[in-house]
Length: 182
Image 1 (cartoon, one colour):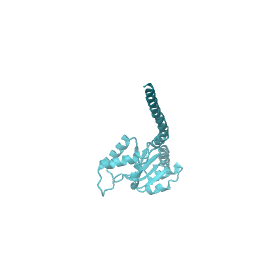
Image 2: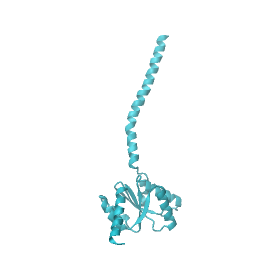
Image 3: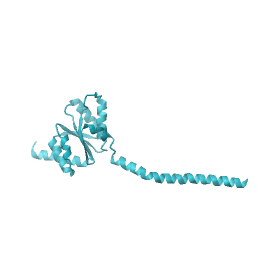
Image 4: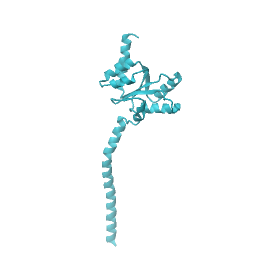
């Protein structure tokens, strides 16, 4: 591969990093070809992309993000594959968890592919022990939905109180008018 091809690959990877709000770096080096193909199929079915890159290409592309990504150097050891997601930052973590469950790993066996690091909305998470925390991360749309729901709830309470109060008031007036008629 000549220098121009390498630079083209780094530029493509940089564009992917900038267009995706989250990506995970995983190591699938000890997996069989059949298992890697099964993992790629699961990624494709969920709208994600998994591709293996050289660590130097990943490092150069990370430098173009405009954030301090030097912490990710710890994840760039050995073979590295990048899992891209357009969805929430938790989608790749859920995919990994589901893949682990489908493979039925034992207690003393490290699940593969191994999560080495994740970049979610300019935050960096390192190590496979971060997987459970990453699963609970809410996406931008989910947070906006919750915020709108919280903002609407006081208005809904006032409206329902006025509506129910009106029904009570009408009932009281009806009862008073019936008493006067008697």
